[in-house]
Length: 139
Ligand code: AMP
Ligand code: ZN
Image (cartoon, rainbow, N blue to C red):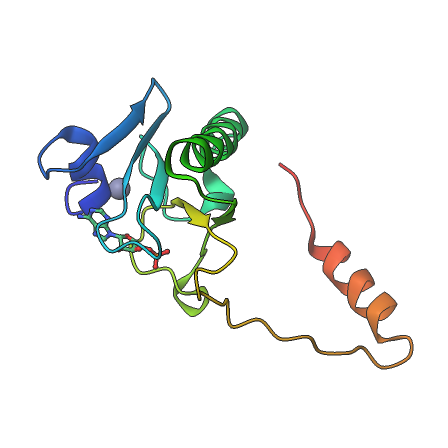
C-alpha cells in the first residue's frame, strides 16, 4: 500500500533497525520503545487487521515474535516479554498495518498495563458467550 509507513519500511524506503526478515514477515525495533529492545513483527503484505492475515503468515508472526522474546531475554537480561496486538483504533492501533509488539519485561521495570477486572452477573457470562459464538466464523 503506497501510503503505509510499515510497507515503506519493508520496501527499504524508510530506515529501520531490522532484526529479522523472511519471505512472510519483517521484524524491526520500535522507534519509541516501552523498554529498550521492543520489537514489531509485521506481515510483509499489507493487512490493516490481523483478522485478514493468512494463517501461515500469522503463525510465522507468532513464532518469530516469541523466539525474539526469548532472544531479548537471553541477550539483554530481561525476565519475560509481552506479545501485544492492537486491532482497531479504539484498541490503540495507530499504524494501520497489523503488527505484533514484542515487549521485553523486567520484574522491576515499572511498566503497568492499565488492566481492570470486571465481574459478570449471574448467568451473564454464558449468555454473552452464546451471542459471540453466533457471529464467530473461522473462514
Ligand atoms: P500501535 O499503537 O499498536 O499501532 O503501535 C505503533 C507502533 O509503531 C508504536 O509503538 C510506534 O512507536 C511504532 N512506530 C511508528 N513509526 C515507526 C517507525 N518509523 N519505526 C519504528 N517504529 C515505529
Ligand atoms: Zn502497509
